[in-house]
Length: 162
Image (cartoon, rainbow, N blue to C red; front, side, top):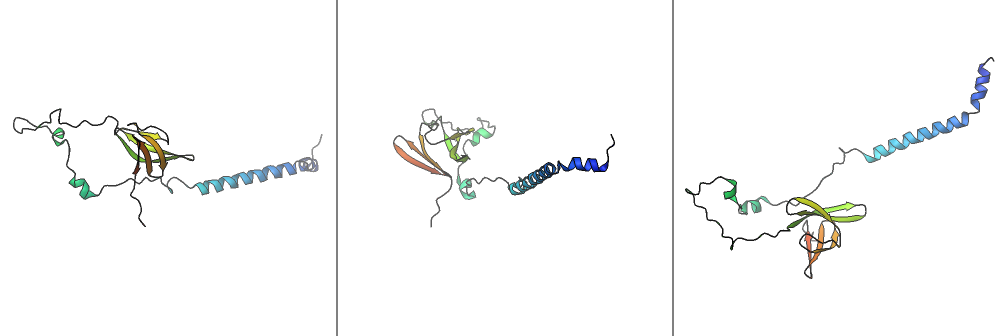
């Protein structure tokens, strides 16, 4: 069988609509991908930032340093140190917690709580805090909870006054 150019051309023509459709879909896919990449930007263009409350330097300097004798080796024979008696020493609560922010997961807001100065846990409305208080409401930067029948609110930032 002798293949001529005319035979090949006639054979390929029947697949022309399919080839055109495949080429159009490929071009649309590439265009959509380029659009999505440009719309998303890059991590360097939109860095994630966290703003935390800051303590003014004069307040920080005015605070008395605790446990300074624990930070240095001290010869007690030369420098007598007044030690606390067990009856006078304050007992620290075992379940100390600190509200450090709010976390958005989908449409739900969670409170980020630092427990005993070590680990961070997330709590939602209705959960019990480490000291037994119940979380009643969480909004951006605000945590409301109820402890022993009284409602309390903790804010990360001061209220804006008009």
